[in-house]
Each structure stands twice: as C-alpha cells, then as structure tokens.
Amino acid sequence: MVPNPLRTGLLRLRGWREAAPLPKEVVIEPTTKCDLYCPTCLHRTLPSSRKDKYMSFDCFKKILDGAPALEQVTMSGLGEPLQSPEIFRMCTEAHLRGLRTKLVTNGMKVSEENAYEIAFSFDFIELSFNVATIPAIDILLSEEPSLGTGGRLSVSVLCTPENRRILPAIQSILSRKGIRCVLVPLENWWPEGGDYYQTLKEMVIQAGGGMAKRRLGRCHWPFSSAFISCEGEVTPCTARMDPSRITFGNALEMPLWAIWDSEPYRIFRKSHLSGGFNRVCQGCPAE
Image (cartoon, rainbow, N blue to C red):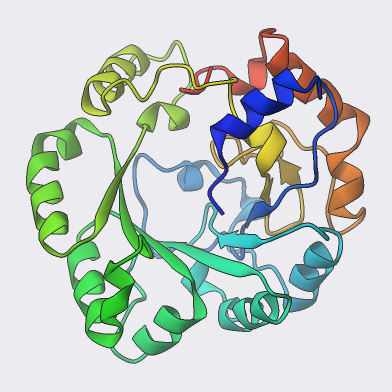
C-alpha cells in the first residue's frame, strides 16, 4: 500500500486531530550496511554505532507482532536491504502473515543467480537509479516479464543537477521497457539554510512539476506509515529516519501499536493538522 495523502485530509475533516488508525504500511530497515558510497545519501553521516548493523529475523517478527493492522512492509533504509542475510526469510514471514512486501534497492546485488528469488519474494520492487539500474531491470524482466506491468517494478531518480540533465533520456529508456519513473526530491536530504538548499529546492519544483508544493492535508506520513530502524527505533518517515533527531520509541521494547498511540506521536500529529511549525520536518517538500 502506498500511503495516500487524501487520507490525511479525511482525518482533518473527521476531527481526528491527535489519534489515527493503526498504520497499514511501515518501512523497515533490514540493515545499515551498503555497497555504495553516494555523496547525496545520509548513509555517509551514520555514527559508528549504527554502521554495518543488521536486524535479526526474531526482531523483525517482534515488530510485526506489534502491528496488527499491517497490510504491507517496505524494506528500505540507510543500507542496502539485499545485504541482509535474513531478507528473504523476512519476506516469507511477511507473506505467511498475509502482508505484501516491497523492496527498495540500489540493484547492485541483483544477479542471474538471485533474480528469481527477488522477483517472487517481493510484490513491488523499486530500484534507485545508478549505473546498475538498467542491467538489474533487464535481469529481473528476463526472469519475470510481468514485473513491468501493474507498477510492480519502478525506478526512483534522485533530483540532482546531474540527473536532471539526463532525465529525459532516463525516462525514454524506462518507458520503452514499460517501467515507471519516480522523481525523488533531493531537498529531503539537505538541511534548510545550507548553501545548496535553495538551488536544489527550485530545481525540484521545476523538474517535478511542482511536486515540492504542499500536499493536501499536509504530510500523510504521521497518519499512514512510519520508518523503523534496524535497531527498532520508530521515526515519522523515510525523510526523517535519524533516531538521534527524533524517535517515538523502540518497537522491540514496546509494541508498535502502543508507540503509534503514545502522547509524543499524538502531539506530533496535532502540530501537522494545526499548521504549526515543526522543526523536525523543516525543509521537507510536504511542509
């Protein structure tokens, strides 16, 4: 399930100012280990205490146990999910519980040897654009051609100045393969007020057709989903996934449903619906 911004607008109309139904989708970080060192990624800022960490299978199950309303689990974070030795076992567990699964990957680990397992373990696959993207797409489609239909396979392109210059070519190549292209606003990764921030924001608005404009009902994330780090820390979204900046609790110590309905989370949601300034979300396109 992709979180729907309309849901937040409905919450406003119904007067749910602080409480919200349990999330139907969460993003879980299987590992912080990555095989790339991208200059625009927050992975390079990870403290040593968070580097090369893995979520165990038992911890994954414990998180799911505390989220009874889940319908989909997305594997993503500040590491490459396919680096996790438990990733396919986690997928099997999610499917046994009747959940859909989504993988966000850089594609570096996609090969002819594991393409079948990837294609049939994940209901949705999103490749972040890099030099491995096109080869990974071809390998996956040769294994399972239906991935290119129904939006099961997509590519996210980070809105850097370099990518913007070649964006028409990227979109042309992907469209010929029947793959959906998603633009990701880079300003989520840069602090507001920085030297590069305003340039990036203007670029994102132009390249994305105004996608950095305020969404209906403000951001949907506090009402629809959450990000859970490989240590179990619950943060509001994938744009704000640093537990040192904000965390509502640890899903390995307290059930996610209890964290979701906690006072700090309620206050956070209320600040969104009231239109109040939220320092945590400063710089995000949704604000």
